[in-house]
Amino acid sequence: MDLKFEVSKKSNECNARLGTFKTKYGTHKTPMFMPVGTRATVKNVSVEDLKEAHADVILSNTYHLWLRPGEDIVFKAGGLHNFMNYHNGPILTDCGGFQVFSLAKPKDIEEEGVTFKSHLDGKKLFLTPEKSIEIQNKLGSDIAMSFDECPPYPVTHEYMKNSVERTLRWAKRGKEVHNNSEQALFGIVQGGEFEDLRKWSAKETVKLGFDGYSIGGVSVGEDNDTKYKMIDYTIPYLPEDKIRYLMGVGDPVDIIEGVIRGVDIFDCVLPTRLARHANAFTRTGKINLRNQKYSEDFTPIEEGCDCYTCKSYTKAYIRHLVVCDEMLGARLLSIHNIRFLTKLVEDIREAIKNDTLLSFRDEFVFKYKK
Image 1: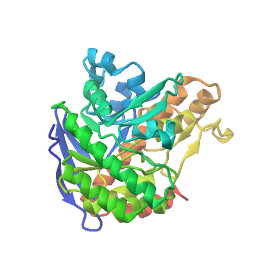
Image 2: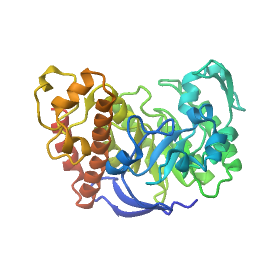
Image 3: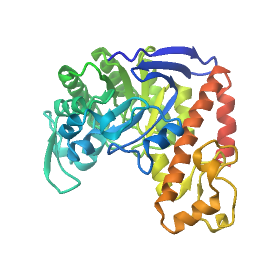
Image 4: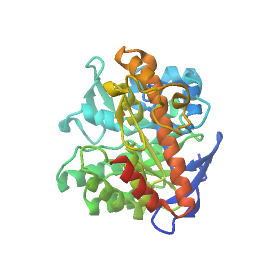
């Protein structure tokens, strides 16, 4: 599927850019944040909640859906959109590589694929690049991801070089069997913290000709300076006319820094994971609603926020739900956190339009980390 990505404006002060891409669901604006629905659901929230929070593209996970309920059941349901009743926008499925390699041992990674044990019952499993693509074809997502090796951090240059070589061979194998004309396929660039390997991985992956390109192997334990270097080492070698996707990044400051460096789309489980631990994003930093000081705070999580939670409930009430272990608490916090990030990228887009992104970054960071 041709996503028809177009850059409408490039920043005059950094590598940020405004863009759009088109699917059968309409026109989608970048930069964009994508909530993660690992098991065909974004935790704690409904598809109606997602629409009200201005979510557009969402993610699901190939590995988890392969195990439960199985790609054949999703296929029989008419694909992920019908199965989970999500018709607001596109769905992206990751390849399952991150989950697989967190379960596998180095000796279980072979040229053909990866042998590992299910996290559910310990059953022995074997996943290949071809199988990952086959599963995603049946899931019927709008964007599929090439199967890659996601190495730990840190590793030696030699280990990473061998890993990148394998990922490139796997990318070629996966692309050869991809047969869903309604589904775009993205390649994944690896290379760890090594500038030469990032450059090589990017250039060789682009030669294979994907519909978009992802920067993988970030947020795996490295510090922020290293994370930003990984992006800087990759972006110059990715095509101007293709989407650039930074995988697994959802910290507000990291999103801004990624956009400044030329990234278009982001995803992360962070907003709903924080919500399950009573945390909420605000422009002045994260807050925890379990804190006693909110027990008589009858103001919204954040004044001026247009999310359903902030328009309807107070910190005192949400704290009551949290300390009573009521599920509604996690739902309300999830709604707010997702909307916080979708509103953040809306503000980022406006700043790019006005060539004020760097001052926007400075002001945001000052308040957020204060």
